[in-house]
Image (cartoon, rainbow, N blue to C red):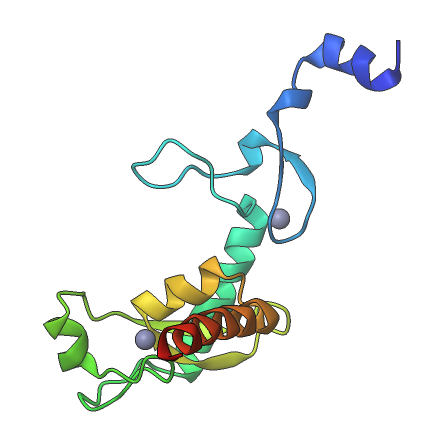
Length: 141
Ligand SMILES: [Zn+2]
Ligand SMILES: [Zn+2]
């Protein structure tokens, strides 16, 4: 029996490990908070979540959210009114570089979720652009 199997027998918690999306460590589930109201665990471990929240708090102090009603999301270029017209809530999200901790800007909630779903990876986003453009070109032909 391997050591891993043996300790699994002894402690039975090896199945209960989860990889943190931030620090990449395999950690016991107790190190992860559950999503509010949902029954699944957050991707980031508690220490990483705390670090992330602290970073955001600091950045928010230095860069307060836009109050100008004409402020436009730098990605979708919608201002608060246009976002409301679409039936979305106006919530400017402080966007920052997770690697360097640097402030990038305020973007709308929709774009924030959008780029997060595409892993904030410019290559992946570029692929999405190419994919959509190719499709449009096919339609034009
Ligand atoms: Zn972590
Ligand atoms: Zn946007």
